Length: 339
Length: 134
Image 1 (tube, rainbow over the protein chains, first blue to last red):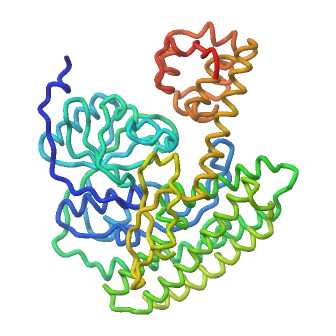
Image 2 (cartoon, helix red, strand yellow):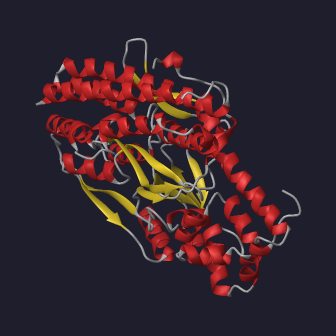
Image 3 (cartoon, rainbow over the protein chains, first blue to last red):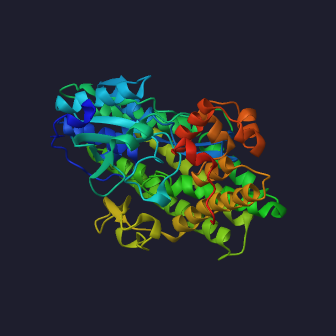
């Protein structure tokens, strides 16, 4: 019998609340755990998590990457930087050392966030398990050989056996977690929320409007629209895979709906109250309407893949262009609102 | 999207779980709302899984006929492809491609096998085993 399995059981009281997205959910619940009440949309918004990127040179199963948000890791870093929170991050070379450190934090009564692959987590429904290395969750205890986990995208508390968790924490490849483990080390007594919100909105809208690269922000959306309009009908199998892949990135991978647009609208609504600017709430309503259009795009694309609707690349491209134009208008007015 | 418009189509893949979407309540305020499945998501998820199954079935056929290796079958079964398997073993792609050839695969050293076994989450002895049927 090894040392890990004779360690006494621990369970740290932890409030499990389901979230839309793993990273914003984990950091919001870790901060709540240390008495800084913050909602998931607020965490996502202040982190300036919203984005759009079309990265044709990064391939997943031969398909380009569509991202509706900033890269993994940037939510935690963005949020804590703007609020003056100091995080403790730790990675490990040896899996055994990483597991031992986790056990030690738990035995000292500290719940920690960790980065894992989604494929090896034994509690994930089998059909939802894919090799995505930047999933985040909170470990808050250990019973025998099982870790007690608050996974923000799952509706209930779950458990994962030590072997699976070790594998999930130490997979290799793109975005390899290297056993990453983190917790807030210092939280300022009174973070300046209004200032952080304004800075974050300026950052996000600047990113979406003015980065002079054709694959990012609203330019990126327009480029994808062009690509879809020009798809060749003879490569229909590949085109269907491409559209399906895009819809999965938009809806399935814990985005809160419409590729994070609803999550961001929720943030704007909350920010309107904090800043006392009703104009932001009006923008939230408009972003909701754009989100609804993204959802219609997803439904059309999916139905076309399945043959429940005739394939019409022009229609999908028009929908995307519409989203891009409307988002551009919203971001410009948001900038005027907070400047 | 309003709260009462959030689709509840009981997706098989969720196995009774639900996820959270942000939707508007009666007063027009955003609230986290559970969703247990949506047609669009179900279609694209099925499509992604079917693609892996299709590749695995093709690899199984090739291995049966002796022109492919069991390793290739296991790779697709564990929802990987050549690029991903190369990344998770640390081998170059050309090396993995070579190892996927049946003759080469049989002569693989124990150390190499160990790398593949670890990446695929299988016992090293299982790497050669091809199931009798799919």
